[in-house]
Image (cartoon, rainbow, N blue to C red):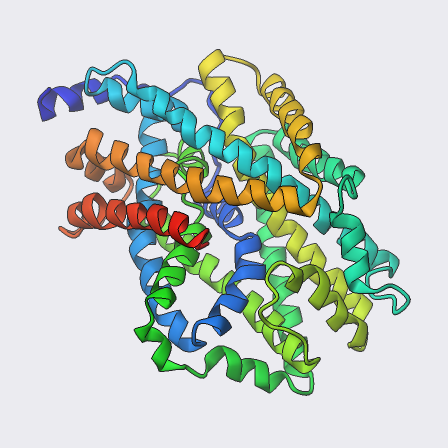
Length: 453
């Protein structure tokens, strides 16, 4: 099929009457930031920076954020907006441009990945909710309660079912109101609140005796680490997963974006504020840990065991514990809404179901599978399998389908919509070859290293 034929056929991809959209560019950007800002920013980024050379790690990380932000993020937003549907429908419509009726089945992979990741992530959101309530009640900062034992009770088999279900109720409750009245309005509150609360914590941490050692750990570059391939590998993985590329959530949010908005500008803002969130988390957690002589490379326990120990020794620790876990809860719920929106939209698009029924079906699946992931070991195995084998594959397929199957001309035209300044000649080589190539590398190295993000 010729380019002109494909373009003419693309024009038949109609705007869906009555389809909900984001009311504003700000609302869309905040929702995308909410999907990107999550546990990877808060518990993984800080110790990755310290683990791989401090400021030396930041150089390849910033490089990959720019490259991926201006290729993959733009691509997924444009892909969703051009097809006016999430990955399941977008893949189908893309292959129809090539007169292929069966290629759309590939869209099941990112949809299944998003649902699987959300199902496991909901368990973690339940932990965060319990820690938030425990902070308000004073249990988290009580000297009578050992932080490790407190977390062990929660993360044990079936140790947090009530809070797990409560987190799902909150998330689906917001989503029932739709895109503009639910997800958009919620993120307009949660994301500014997240940054404000972490700024308060960052200012407080500056005043802690010994915090200066944490800043040195973060920002004094150990240049020899740049000679290690692992530094570049983990910087790539951190950037890739931090920007929430999976061929799912960013596509489905893009499908709700008006064609008058500038996708390139939106992607720039998402990449910038996602990086700011990661840096804020590092500026709060690492100096705090050093001030109390705790382990800065504890991984996930950094948030649930190490930080509660910090708050116990901090003046007004209960207050700052509430601030911390409330901010983390906002980040968790905003990410969870994005992950669940993909399968919900797929049910609406494929079977013409109402939003309420689609949410009910997804909720039953999330609860039915999620309760068996309550144990920390089972959850860890589940999340590793999904993040290593499914998520990067979804991103790779989305990149190939949009930039190769739809074609460079179509991709450029869709990314250019709403933008006054013409996108430069960098677009085609950076998207078709660099981004898709990097995604292949992420997939291979993730399997080789057992996860890099």
